[in-house]
Length: 194
Length: 290
Image (cartoon, rainbow over all chains, first blue to last red; front, side, top):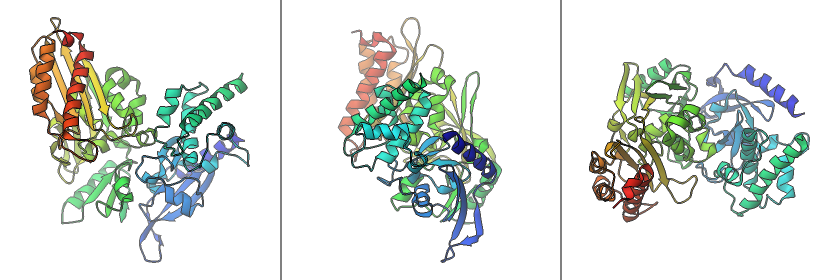
């Protein structure tokens, strides 16, 4: 299932890649301000939006593409609540102009579960009580995805998880359970692989 | 608000050149957006015309040469962290790259952006200064090289013309046998802006005399600076506790920290001295010898 999604994503992004987002005169807003067309593959689906040139990726996801899973916390790259993956790498979507995601694969928390089935990471967060109020959870999950991908089946150490998640703040102070859940996910995956 | 997204460096330089002449409103270049969007989100935009450099391939890539590396301006801190040669030959640059914000920032923030943003607290800047880096700038008129030590002329002021863009930064490898050092002191281990940030390179000869000394600091003056008096106090003298004490005393005359939101002048002076001591002791245990 995952594989199929990835396949579509690759296809779509190859198609979109060569052209950069640029200003269009066709799409102008009601007050005549310039807009640009941004096309990206969001959670495996090709999406398009016509947006003001400097509009943030976070706002395009939440407002134009109806994906409110990514949150805005600090608006300055400290809290990580807005973390998404751009071509597999984490970024604070509140610091990225949507135009720079043109042609890219973007993954938000909504893209983790497939057809209502949670990923192992999400299930482990639930099992181990790693989500409290939930505001930081989308960012924690998304950043953990990059970490687990980088680990390639290895179980990351406690310090390693803490360093990877240093840009995701949790004000319920649930850090220990979050770190444990990420490590447990890697452990479970290893057991399954065996 | 307008955004230009040139397809080539030539087009970007053309746009810079046009904005620098005929009284046009200035064009604000940016790359990963990690500094720019903080001020945009705060509702204090620095202008209305922006130039997106992120897509310019000519400004990407790490080239390894015999005497050093050349980092394209768009090299991200993540790319620096992950680069095998840099990890081996320029560990202090890798250490700095690993402490710029967190992963989300390191994936997007660029070395060129860190230089251009010209914050006195910029994490990579003391490393560039301690390694005698050279900044390569380009404009439609041509290119030129600016020694990093001559780049900043004052608080957030660069010795660059309005039509110039940073294309790359060249970082020489330290002399063979030299020890390199990086230390950032902030309120939290990860993610915080530094109270004091420093980098050093030190080489001693067989007799223990310092033959090459660089100590550069951020957050202790309006610009990132080299502690030249402290360096001089070390040069040509055998490593000893007396040499360390002399360098530490000289350091106080090199720096001009202030009280601000992140720390106090006194704290910064004490910490800068402590970090210099730590560097020297790690570099050579003879600096402990009375």
